[in-house]
Structure formats: structure tokens, C-alpha cells
Image 1 (cartoon, rainbow over the protein chains, first blue to last red):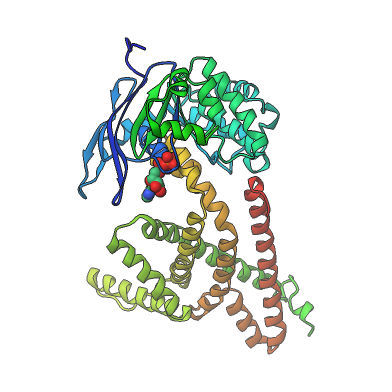
Image 2: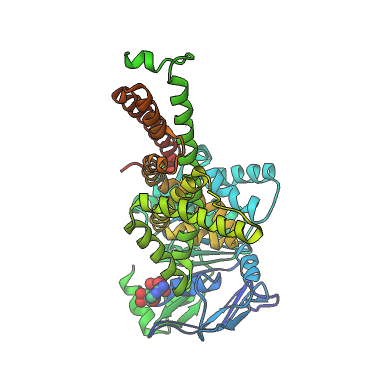
Length: 258
Length: 236
Ligand SMILES: Nc1ncnc2c1ncn2[C@@H]1O[C@H](COP(=O)(O)OP(=O)(O)O)[C@@H](O)[C@H]1O
């Protein structure tokens, strides 16, 4: 695929260590508008860390991240570690990049509807009535509009994750990051969340999905990236990489995860 | 005379004076408690996010305050405050002893004491927060002040309510110690009545009933507040 327009997200030579543990060892990745990229890899390969760097929940030690062409400015802090040069730029970029977490992380003191309208009203400063109408439409789309006045603790995991997806969508994000969105769910609830994600992919949203769901990677994503020890080991359309993997480690990973 | 007729609200009874004194008790305890909330909030914030020096100072504050008898702290504020005011007045012109009001000294002392306890309550409540919810707030682009106002403060308050209820009961009891400054709160008023009628038991019994009434109503209030605040939390 040729990238004629600016990539939705562009990662250049990303590095990150925790203490002496080098978790990301120079990752580069461009995602075009509308691409759905499944990020695979065994546990500890750095998938979540990479995703968390993209919206600055972790600060990279080195490298460059650009969202829709805007480079996130970093600088060396006083203690020698990198830090965001400009907090308001980070906040602005985060409001365009939505994150869906493994453990949902809905705000427990707010109802489902309140969770969905919180950021549109208070971060994006949009009119309340408009936000409520949109939130109800989004909740209907993910199939839990009847739960809008419930608190998160009273929903099943699958319902909570769908609410979290609605909360992410409410920001009208340019890019959606999913960090193992189905890993905390009981097996019988995985399907309902994957169905919602599939419909988002079909709408042409740009998504980076860290997942262990091989079915999703194979059937829904437009591209598969396999990480190994903090480096990109395999990268290509699912049809190609699954049938003819170039990396022996990815071949082994596939055989362990069918 | 029976306790009931002694405590009648009429002009020859002591009931009205006792009720007014109960009002003074409530006011000095509430002012102290609210001051303590402000102090406790700030100290908790310093303990959680301050530099090493500020944190050490905050720890010293709670350690010292919990190690000194409350009565002594009230004396220190009353006499220390008066000495300070007197020397300031001395600078401005000739003058003798200027006393701080018992109410101000008492409320300040209760505030300082209660602040030490409240800082621990707030700190504990903050550590009970789910980190993931804070990450979610960051991830939608909330800046720090907004995240504090919309996500952190409501949840900290929710977890703090039971602890704050206990600290409030303490403040109420400490308010009785303020009687040493001469402030006519419930205990002092009872002593006055007891002395002038020679019916100490009746007065102290009435005082006990009034204290109990205040604590009963307030613990009911805190329970209501807690169940309202915990409405989104699954009981385990
Ligand atoms: N905040 C952190 N502090 C220290 N180590 C971390 C932190 N986050 C992740 N790690 C470590 O980094 C490695 C990679 O983690 P992660 O990116 O979550 O991998 P993956 O998502 O591929 O399982 C793991 O060994 C993990 O223990």
C-alpha cells in the first residue's frame, strides 16, 4: 500500500526501557488512514508499551511519534529522562486519540451515559444536549442504550467494554488504540465486543489493536504486525503473513495460537 | 428540683441556655472541622506529590500533632495567640494584655488537630482510587485540574466519608476541651449551671443527652452521605 496522504500515526525508531529492561528497541510503524492493524506478539514483547507511548501514557526514551502529521514534542528533563515538552499539546493530541483498555477503566462514580458525555462536554466543550443525543446513539450502536443510567459496577465485563468503546467514540477520534480489549473478559463475552470492533473496522476507522484474538487479526485487520523482544519481526497483510510468514518466530507463534 | 423542670425552656429554666451552648459547641466543632478539611487536603496533597522536604514537613506535622495531648494544643493556641496579639498591640501603642477569643483559639486548635487526622483519611482514600480510571482520564485529554475536579476529588471524597465521620466525632469531643478558654460551650455552660443550682448531676446528664443527640444525628447524616456516594459501587 502506498501512503499518499499523511499517515494517521507514524512511529519512528521508538525506544523505551524500564530500569535496565529494554522493552522497545527501535520500533517504526506507519498506519494509513482507515487501516486496522493487529499487533501480535508473545507476552512481554512490548505491545502494550508501544500502544501506551502513542498517547503518552508512557514517555518514550527516544524516537518520534506523529499523530496526523503532528509530531509530539519531547525534551530531556532535569533528571536526564525524556518528558513531554508541552503538556497542552499532549492533552490536545490525546483528545484525538482514543484508548480502550483491557480493564475497561470506566469512571466508577459516573453512570454509563455520564461516562460517555464526560470528555465531550468538559474536554471538547461541546453543548451538553448535543453530547447526550450523540452518546445515546453510540450506546444504541454498541447495544447497551438500555443500560445508560446504570453504574459500571452493575454491568457485565462485555457491557463495560462496549460502554468504554462508546466513551472512546464520543471523542470522534482520528485514531483508536485498543489494548487487549477482550483479554479480561469471560470467553462467552468476547464475541459481543469483537462484533462491535468489527463494525468499527468496516466503517473505515483507523485502529491499532493489541490482541491475542487470531480470528480478529486474520479476518478483520488490514495488516498484522508481530513484535518480538521490542522489535517489529513481521509486518504485512494477514493473507500474506499467515500463509507465508517470513519470520520463524512468527511461524512458531501462529502454531501455538490457533 | 427535677432535671426536667431545671431544663425547662421558660425564663426560670436553664433549657434555653443549654441549647444555645450546644449551638456554640456545634459551631466551634464545625469551624474546626472545616479548617481541618482544608489543612488535611493540603497536607495529603503534599504527602502524595510534594518534594522530599515538603513531605518530611508534612509527616512531622502529623506525627507531632498526634503525639501532643489535645488539651495542651488548645492551651498553646490560646496563650500563644494571646501573647502574639499582645506583643503586636505593644508595637502599635501602649497597651496591656490582649486575649484572643476562646472561640477562635479553640476552632484553630481543633482545625490543626483534625487536619492531621483528615490528611491521613484523604491520603488513604486517594490510594484506594483505581489507577486505571486516572489513566482513562488522561487518555481523553483531561488536564490535571480538570481531572482532579471531575474524577479524583469526587472519588476521594466518596472513600473518605466514613473516615471523615470518625474525625468529626473526635472534633465534637475536642470541643469540650475548649471550655478551658472560658468559651461558654455545652460543657462550660453545664458547669456554670451545676455551680449555681448545686444540681451537677442534672446538668451533666442533660449535657450528655445533648452530645449524644448531636453525634446520633451526625452519624446518621454521614451514613446517608456514604450510601449516596457509594451508589455506583458494588457491595462485596
Ligand atoms: N510501568 C512499568 N514498569 C516496569 N516494567 C514495565 C512497566 N510496564 C511494562 N513493563 C515491563 O515491560 C515488558 C513489556 O511489557 P508490555 O509492553 O506490557 O508487553 P506485552 O503487552 O507485549 O505483554 C514486560 O516485561 C513488563 O513487565
